[in-house]
Length: 350
Image 1: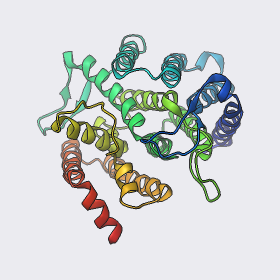
Image 2: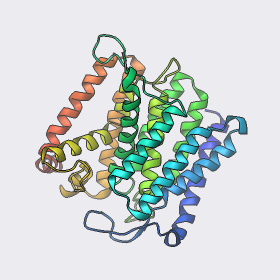
Image 3: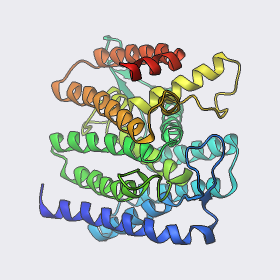
């Protein structure tokens, strides 16, 4: 890894850290403050400016690192619109339907304007590669909106959502390095620097009892969109660095939690988007774990699941084996979560 890559990572980290601290002071004027309520873990009003800070840091770092003719214009422009939508949601608390509709519209733009589309999902049934054909467009939209909301759903504890995205981006960077794609590795490490610059202000450390800033919906939507972009764009075509099923493993824990809780809500006759306190991080907290221990445990689980996908990709394990292994793992997770309270108390006791 050359000094230019390390320097770009450092610039991204520094800009993100400084901009987060600066925007914390401006948050009251922008009216971007998250106030505590019964469903939230924080006890004091907290600036939710992480999305803005990360986007501006990302934009500035890209302008510094790339010559004008190589700027990734399309993803940056789409990221701008997704952050704008997130800021509106943070400011005015949009309802689920218009928010999902606007996310779907941006996914459609990603397909038709940027050419990022999920056309092939691999050999999942041991009968040859599955091409989506007419289903490519709706599956791309569903996948993009799903990843965006999986990040949003996981943003419930200090340092958790950003940490989970850092894990996924880190594995993507490793796969890119193994594939010999230096340009993509630079992009991903730049993004990691920006993420870490915010994460150190968002996570709880030894003397910090709560986050200094939240990412807000602007941040969760931005990170979810960028993950969806990389998962889809880098799993298609001859230059792909991973298979679609590997992407599932790299982001397995947020996907498990999101799909699992939506299924449980539907089974109980409730809206899949209804608010509750039954996410995995809520279960750990109610079982007696501290916020720091809960975040640490969930990041370790995410790393373990991501490592399965990473090793499967590197070792060339058949996509069908990886896919059905993923589905079996989800089934076990779903079964445990149906009895979550007892299960988490048992884990704590042992």
